[in-house]
Amino acid sequence: MSQPAEVSSQLCLACGLCCDGTLFADVELQPADSAERLGALGQKLRRGKDSAGNSVQKFAQPCPALGPDCRCALYAERPARCREFDCAVLRSVQAGALTPDAALRRIRHARKQRDAVRRALSALGNEEVARPLSQRFQRTKRALEAGDVPDGRTWEEAAEAFGELTLAVSALQFTLSREFYPDS
Image 1 (cartoon, rainbow, N blue to C red):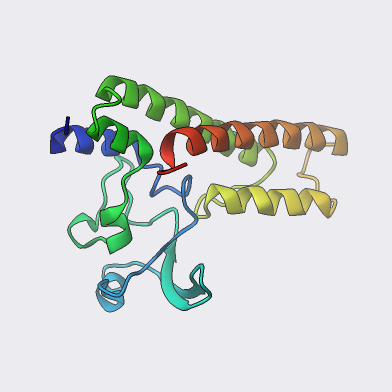
Image 2 (cartoon, helix red, strand yellow):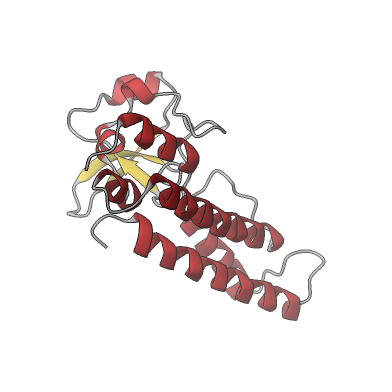
């Protein structure tokens, strides 16, 4: 049972996890994408490697085109990867295996978990909101391993806060793996 486009739109506009640095660290451009056009629209592109080691252009997440209302400022001209991606929650609704209300509950749950990770990162001094969550976590971990304790905290307090962060990240990753990544 296929769901109408309005339901898909409603779910995506309630979510944004694929664009806000929660699900992905970056988006690789495909041959059909116009790097020049995306650059002219404000996307900051960089060179990187794909999974096979080939040179590709990509842009980092969180996507600067994502608005606070989960609307994409480049929607009509978004890259192919963005056009083609449907998370597992959306696919389940489209297949009739999940109701839109149940999908919205899963989205709200994942967003709460994401927010808990963001708060825990902030509590440890990481305010790099323009970086994906995975990179923020790794940078915070490396800083603590190097002995860089946030101002106003003892080493014990920082260690406890990092334990809370690690649990929050694990819970979020479990939810994302189970609910959002396709074919997981």
